[in-house]
Each structure stands twice: as C-alpha cells, then as structure tokens.
Length: 408
Ligand code: ADP
Ligand code: MG
Image (cartoon, rainbow, N blue to C red; front, side):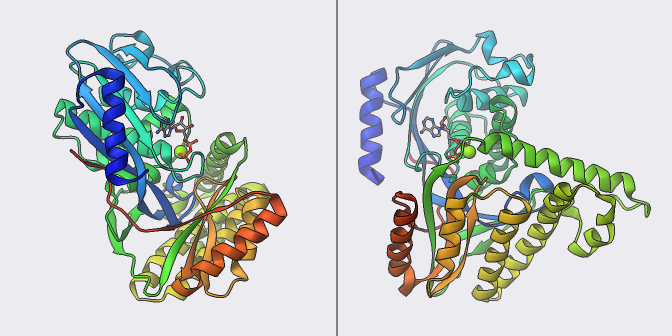
C-alpha cells in the first residue's frame, strides 16, 4: 500500500476500531545507512538517509487516562493500559530488567517513548487511542523499530502540544526507549535519521556531539539499491549488545594505558594513526579487531562524505566495499547469505560499491549501482541467491526521503 490508499485504509480501520475520526495522521521513515556501521555507539560518524517507506499512525486524544494501542501489522486485539499503571514506570522507578513488560511485545516501543517523555518532564495530561501501520519489510534491518519510536514521539508532541520537543529530542527519546525499555543497546543513528532526514540528502552525523550536516546525494547516473536477504539470524540483538561491550572494553584498556595525558573519550575520537600507535596495549586479538573496525570505519566515513561531495563516486564505492570487508572479518557481524550477496554483487559490471547495512546478522545490503546496470544487477543476483539459498531476495531502488512529519 502506498500514499492516499494507505492513509485512507488507516483512517477507515481507525474508525472501525475506535469509532469517529483521528485527530491527526503522522509519519516517520525507516533508514538505510550508506557507510559508518557500528560507529554510532563508538562516538564516530555515520552517513544514513531516511527512506520514503516507514511507519504511519492515526491518533486521537482521550478525556480519560486510558491508552489504547493497535497495529495493522499485528493481527491482535487492542492493547490497553492506564497512564497510572505502575507497569509503565512513569514515576521513574524500576530497573532495566523489570522495565520491559514482556519480551516480544511490540507495545514496549511506544510505551518506552511515553516513559522517555515522562523522564524528560513531559508528562501526558490524558490518554489516547492510536493505530499504527508500517510498510518497512519486517526484520530487514531498515529500522522499523526506530521509525515506530520516532513516530510515537512526534504523535505525542503534536497531540499534547509539547512545542519545545525538537526533532533531535525525538531521536534521543526514541533511542532511550529502545535502550532502556526494550533492552537493545543501539546507538543514535537510526532514530536520528528517522527524525531528521531530508529529501534527496544523506545526513553526516557526528554521534559524539550530535553535530550534523546534510549532504546532497549527487549520484549522477547511479542509484542506491537495497537488497533484502530475507534472513535474520536469531542472535542479532544479543550479539549486537556483545559488540558494544567489546568496544567498551577495548576503549577502557586504551584509556588505562594512555601515558601522554591525551583524553580518549571514545574509539571514534582516534584517527587510525593514533590507534596504530596505541594498539599494542590490547592483548586480546578479538578486542583488537573490534576496536580496529570502530576506528577505521569512522575514518572511512569521513573520507566517503568528502568523496561524495567532490563527485568521486568511485572512491565512495571503494570505501563501501572496505566497510563490508571490515564488518565481515574484523567486526564479524555479517553472515554467509549477506556475504554471497556482496561477493556476487561485486562481480556484476556497473556495481560501484556494495556492503551490509544495519545492525548485521542478516537484513539488507546497500549498493550503489549504475542506472543502466540496476536491472541486470537485480536479475542476476536474485538468480544466484535463489540457486544458493532457495530464497527470493527483494530489491528496492530507494530515494532519500523526508524525516518524521505530520501528514494531517
Ligand atoms: P528493524 O530492523 O526493522 O528495526 P527490529 O527487530 O529492531 O527490526 O524491530 C522490529 C520490531 O519493531 C517488530 O518486531 C515489532 O515489535 C516492532 N514494530 C515495528 N513496526 C511495527 C508496526 N508497524 N506495528 C507493530 N510493531 C512494529
Ligand atoms: Mg531496530
């Protein structure tokens, strides 16, 4: 479903479920990261763009303190909770363990955002009814979770008039919801891209300072193609959290060994040369490889944005390829299916660069492909993948879209 049909359907289903009309319709996009993977929780740079697909919500304020959640993607009844229910922990009580209200309960994402608003002092004066619908392929690593969080924040800001809540606040509160409430230790990238995306641009974000600039995606005669492997390996979120703690360990070893008095606030604060001069302090070869990825990926991202700005799309592609190799061998967040998509993709003429994108362990690749090669790319790679794994990879030629906004 797209555009008007999608919104019509959402409004109609809202009326059937709750009666009457919604106060507003809201949208927050998913994202694809072009380069700068697993750098966002290491104080490095990222370079994502928002997509034109994402999550929609129809919502209406209530007079009482009930909240009702429903999603057209989840075939279940409406979930109800009172704003006064202690399980929402709006008084700030509760530990990380008892905050998550139940594993795999999708309403933890919007509940987490209500919790993050309360934590920031923006308490809801009443409840609301909301119906969600998302058109991001499920579990594909294009960040449906961040779009759901940012969307919920936008909806709360608009329904309850919290004018001081900025787009960056929506990103931060979404990340808090996911970190604390869902227990996924993600960085800020996904929520930032969803909240702050700009049509036809990617966002060059310093995750240490949250300073950002927009870079026009001047790809000349090339397109961004996202390939969905349709696999998501089980350990995705626990391995993600493990990578994060491995990087924290490597950082604390470097900090403890530092003799020069230089501050090392994050792995992303080191250049590859500075890291090279210090890396002998890390004995564990696994930690060394993790840290190496974080440092070098950050440097690649900075260089890639310069390359794009100066029109050198081929250098940009080379850096994407190097990013994948580092994620495959040093950071070890790829998987055989994705590696086949990347290796075979690179053999196709007109492919400028291709790499895994997102948290890893499945999901999608992102490729820059010459416009005249897009068709053979999808066809040939789809065929090879089907022969090897029996799966139908999906291909999306994507445009950079606008960040979260109110539709009506
Ligand atoms: P992604 O890479 O898409 O962010 P995640 O596993 O992080 O993958 O998040 C997917 C989860 O987000 C789903 O399992 C579901 O709980 C929740 N979610 C996302 N979009 C919706 C939606 N429209 N309706 C209900 N739940 C959703
Ligand atoms: Mg997610």
